[in-house]
Image (cartoon, rainbow, N blue to C red; front, side, top):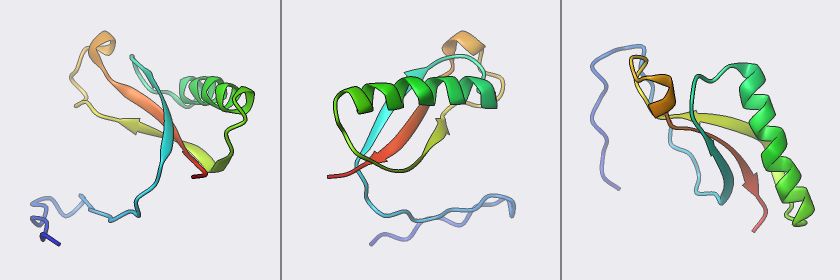
Length: 83
């Protein structure tokens, strides 16, 4: 395995996570807890309708720096699904 560079900022932490299959819903704008919960509900409803089993809780993923205009931001809510 390749070694990762050490972050220059001590507040940045790199964690290795195990490989997983996730279901994702994408949305733009700012990510507040209320908006993230709303998008997670949409995702979970689709998975339930399609009888796809999940593992654990839905979690947010954010990709843009803070100065990105809201309509250009890419956010996702994901949840692990059973293989």
